[in-house]
Amino acid sequence: MKKENKRTKARKHDGFFRYVYSKPVNAKTLLSLARESNRELDSILDGVDLDTLSPLSGLFSEVQERGESDLAFRAKSAGGGDLFVGILLEHKSYTDKQILDQLGRYAFNIMVNKNDTDFRWFPTKAIVIYNGTRGWDPLADFRRKNRAKFQGKDLPFEFALVNLSELNDERCLSDGNVEAAVGALVMKYAFDRRGLSEKASAIGYRLELLGNFGKDRFLEKINLYLGEFIGEEDLEELQMAFKSIGQRMGFVSAGDARRAAERSGRRAGMKKGMEEGLKRGLEKGMEKGMEKGMEKGMEKGMEMGMEKGRAQVIDFLRSQGVSPEIIAKACELK
Image (cartoon, rainbow, N blue to C red):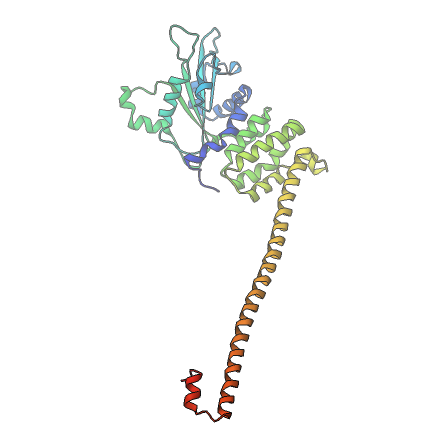
């Protein structure tokens, strides 16, 4: 299991969260699954008609211009009429001491109804979707440390933390909205390689309901997301476990073929690279060895030649009766 990503890296995978849950129907499914085991979430969503969820566009707010919050929606009150509330969804895979301050800025800067001339701010419900490995309750921290600043009252917006570890796996695997429910499971087990492997086969069966194109596209998003948490080899094993019924019967989709070709290409590339590297290394080594050998041989040959020549000179001088002293001086012998 990998440790939580550092804050500087944590937002790389937020694209998966936005991709899945920017669709109101998927956001509704996530909130509906989560509120079954989360009293605080169920409480703040009481009286909200989730069927009326819609993205908070630039017509109402500055969410598009600012690009701050992960997701921002508005929804009607369950009682009907034109009363709207704002819903912020923020994804965190790590604990963050500044989260409430961050949500406060979002509530003030983003949850604005430009069409309202009397009071522009939507009553805001801020919901953090958390899939980190540590226990975390930012609201408890607030109440212990800062509640007195609000004269004993809670925050100026409603808040709930959704810890995805509390989701019911069987409910997720049986929900009709496959994309939203499977997305929640993948996020839940992002740090738990073994747990995700155990669910992978069941997830594969559910993904089959998306059709070949939808399944391939969604698997690509899962690959990108999980790539932030687990290694490439583990990811490939998971992709094998995600195989659908059709694949087990011999059918291979275009996406499956592409991923298989990519894996085969990587392996072939590594093999070719190792072979080429070894070949070049041997050639370079032999070339260098021959070069050094020739240099060494020439140096040795010259040295031996000089020694032999000197010996011949000494022999000649001796044959002419030259004294040893003069021979030594002439040859610089000591």
